[in-house]
Length: 117
Image (cartoon, rainbow, N blue to C red):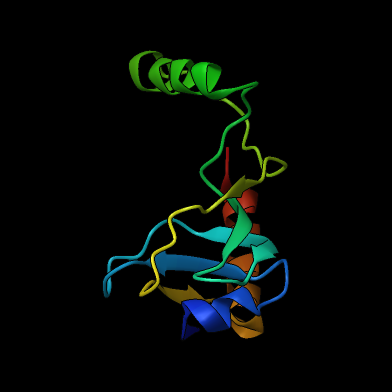
């Protein structure tokens, strides 16, 4: 893995897997970078969070999270929805997963799926 600044992060291609921190070293959840929206000023980009669940909008999303927490219901992962970062934190840093790291994660998840009941 490597740590890059915001300017460098904006040059990464869509598909980059990363965690963001606005102050070292409190990393957010794992996300997948989509297209860079613009690079002027602090720049912005689109992303997919690996904590998204299927929902038709934010009202349903919040209701489903409540349902999950209060009733033990489960909902499928949503990796199709793309959002925009929109925080414009110029000093943000990013922990970027490299190819070898992604291969380790793949192997880890393949094992987890095979052991899942």
